[in-house]
Image 1 (tube, helix red, strand yellow):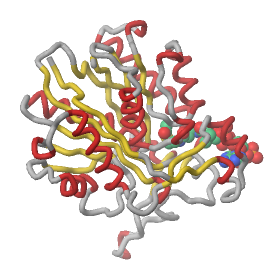
Image 2 (cartoon, rainbow, N blue to C red):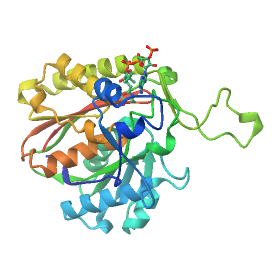
Image 3 (tube, rainbow, N blue to C red):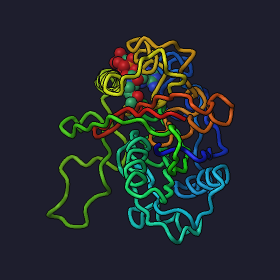
Image 4 (cartoon, rainbow, N blue to C red):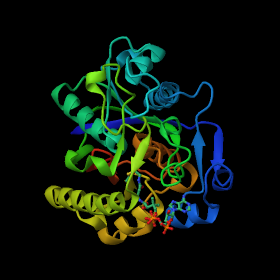
Length: 324
Ligand code: ACO
């Protein structure tokens, strides 16, 4: 018996930004982006598509699929690094929009690992209180946090939101385990400054703006190794063989990271769900969007063993196993 997913949902902005369109924004080529990252397009938030609005829409779909009323929620956690305000949290906006008046709500900053960290939290809360229903959302509008003159970063990311409602089940299904890590010592490889301090004594040296900055090659190496280690460790600890996995849903960073990782893990590509070509890297939203798409496409059956893994700024990374 354990913590199960009761329903999933997702929401993507309408505006599609293709690689060809990017050629007129920054010095790049559609072929370069496609061959180095596998990304063909990404969604860009517009009016009515702020982070909390995408998150709320994804949540509404997840609640409806779960057959759970907003008032039944005990907790709302939103993984995000691109809230439209620093305070209140995106989670509090979502709570109000949904009318989830019995839930407490907060955001979680773990970059691309936000949804997996949130799933781990949901599991712990629900194990402590079997009546609890937890809504976990990954939502981003990273288009608002990019330097559109920096071709190293602006081609990689996109906007969107995904959500899942978790609850307790007396069956043998549920979250099997997770293996989570962080290493703050490597923060300079991937970071985003806060807005400039209002207190002159607390100005941060080298604050070049509140947008993503990255050493791409270094991030690539760390991401592949870290996800491989966390997956291997988790499978070994839980006594689960790679052959018994039905589906793998990795963070959709880019195609080269994914193929490198999957090759190292010796898992057939046919078991891996990939949608990075359509949406780019949507950070905390990437896993729940992929989960919802896999779920809605009928790729997941009750009793399936599903592996998730992620890596992001912090660094943060980890892996989670669930028996669906
Ligand atoms: N268009 C055209 N040329 C470009 C572009 C671009 N958008 N970006 C970089 N280049 C150029 C560089 O300037 C460089 O030119 P030079 O040789 O004349 O100096 C050349 O392409 C090679 O640059 P590299 O950075 O070495 O290219 P690389 O093959 O490493 O690919 C990439 C870059 C795609 C960013 C890769 O390093 C990568 O995938 N890193 C992982 C980053 C990532 O996914 N971060 C997301 C957050 S963390 C996560 O989600 C896991």
